[in-house]
Amino acid sequence: YQERTVELRVVDIGLELGVKTVSIQSPVIFRKGRGLWNKYSITIPSMIRSALKHGQMVLIEDGSGVWGHVHVNDLADLYVIVAVKLLEKADVPTGKKGFVFSANGEHTWKSVAQKAADILVSEGRLNTAVLKSVRSSERPKYIVFEGFKVNEEMIEMGFATNARTISTVGRSLGWDPKRGEEAWNRGFKEDFKAVLVEQK
Image (cartoon, rainbow, N blue to C red):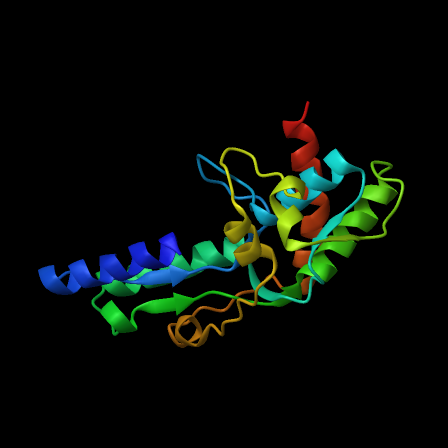
């Protein structure tokens, strides 16, 4: 897992050089960001692209994997809190203890696929909301990512695993995320519209 390898290396180098490091570990980030580059999440738009390409929403395995999610603005608030506290030399866990989780809700991939399929049917882009489960060997063929290549291992890790965390440290620092399940559910239509715009 390349991201994990890099994060651990950063911690090791920080300890060697005496530099404090903090790694904010984010789950699925939803709703539109305001940064200069990618403004949307990767996973849900990729599922929507795949459904539009194949005419049916695809589910990897049984979709029982559970992942966390966080609203992009709540996540931005956490970054600000951590940065300010570090500048103020407040007590913030760093180094090997400086991993801060940011989940503020959970979903299964089956629930995500079903919600997205329902929206695509309601918008007239799919004829059926029935999910199609695919086997391991079929994964790369059915998942469409924009801008980079993926292999079977990456798709399995992203869509057929559990990634459950609790944001204990973040909340202890004063983080109080405001955007929960209602905002999560609204995000599907926004992702759908973003995919349609990119395809024009």
